[in-house]
Structure formats: C-alpha cells, structure tokens
Length: 137
Image (tube, rainbow, N blue to C red):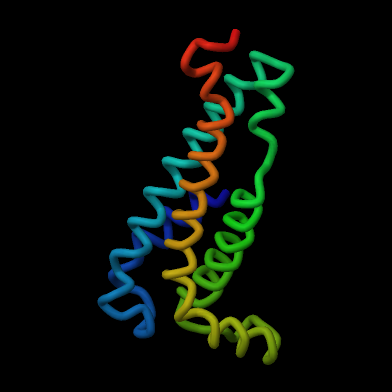
C-alpha cells in the first residue's frame, strides 16, 4: 500500500500544491525510489532469513530504525495524500488545520524516512553478514 501511495504521489510531484515548491519536486520521486527499493530488498532478505530459521530469522527482527522509519513514512504519506488533492474539506476543522500546517514538512519527512529505511536495511545486512558471507550455515 505504501509503495502504491508513494508512486502516485511521486507522479504528481511536479503538479502538487504550491507549498511543495520547486525544491520539493525531486524529493518525492527520490523518496519513492528509495522506499520501494528498500521494501523489496528487505522483503527478500526477510524471506531468505526465515528460510534459514533460528538465529538468522531472529537477526531480522524489527529494529528501532525500522520503527522510526515507519512512523515517519506513515506521517509523511498521510499528510501528502490528505493535502495533494488541493483541499481539506472532508476533514474535521482541527485535523484539516493540523494537516495543512504539517504538509510542507511532508516531502522532507518522506525523504528522511527513506534514509532511515536505508539505515535499518544496513543494520539487517550487518546482522545477517555471517550467513551472507558463508561463515555461518
């Protein structure tokens, strides 16, 4: 679901709301590419580790970086989806105002979540390195 949302948002990056500005247009496609690449890579790594069982499977348990990445990513995607249509009429006044206030932070937050995703992927690869290098079977 996240991949679909970020692809749709990235496709609209150049025609987004005025607050995106020219500086944000590159953030959404870059963030989308990093997020999708990380998700595909992490899924493959987790499946492989699960097939090994035991300590390899435990090595890819969710890390703090993964949890923070998910929170940042969900916040950014929610704010972008809520405000990319140009209006907040369907939201209660308080929530609509909050989304409108944080919306300009959403593209950098999405990019930051992509960076956190890469950090967590590196942590998982490091934890699985004994199996990836062949030192552990």
